[in-house]
Image (cartoon, rainbow, N blue to C red):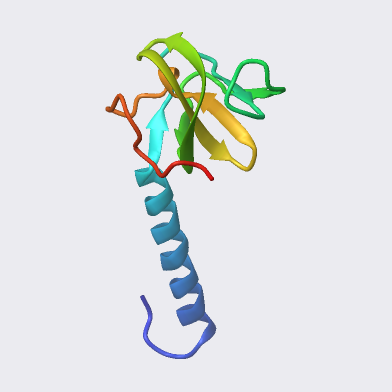
Length: 108
């Protein structure tokens, strides 16, 4: 990082901040099961609106989790649903979290 008050110093600080943010976000992402194009729903169940389908090899952030419909998937049977964005949920049965329980706070 440059020392001083010039534009280069501001650019270096902004680049460092962006790198810190990217590293923090990457640290809290979980991989979707191999070979699965996971459906993103508007709520914690298959009856909720389909919003999109994630591509193969995707990883997702888990902002919070909540109980919902029971689903059997690659990583077992669970009723946990992961909030991956505003109003966006995926079944935890297809997300490799390394746990059978909560890995994030419960959604309000």
